[in-house]
Image 1 (cartoon, rainbow over the protein chains, first blue to last red):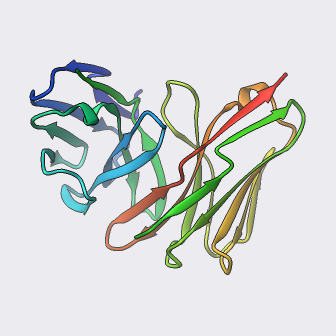
Image 2: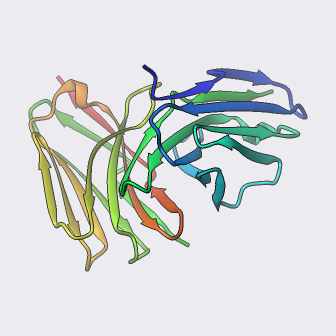
Length: 114
Length: 113
């Protein structure tokens, strides 16, 4: 069983387009995250949701809008895509209420903006 | 803001040797220090973690040490094997109403057979 899944795995699109990435976890975790990993492999947190509530919102352009319809899902919508948005986007989850902070990462979505 | 520095950025060792990766963090409120391993094209996966009330933890060939006073923690891998080759990330986490983890820039470890 896949613990944290993301779709799509690859996304190639043109500048100016709008796209979404979906994430689902079946671990029963209460917290979900979005990270961006650039070409230098630097992992930077973008957003964190706890029980569908936005908890952490780093200095991310407002073209990026996360949405959590329920505890098991956290989607990322990106408007007006730019070349600099090209990266691998990882979704992750953890169980804060249980006091375990280990994060389980999804397989990543490689976004290429041309 | 919070910052985690990691050194070295690249580390090459001979199979069987030890590898040490060092990190420092800036926020003294950090209380959780995980290490993640990321193989090429794969997702990061936790290999070991340590809480702020513990100074050292070991799991087979992997050990982590924490010096809270110096805000410094390290990963030690002994008897390295080619399959240890990967990018290793340290991180510092704190719970501020929501749990936040700041990652270091990563260390690319090469283990030569």
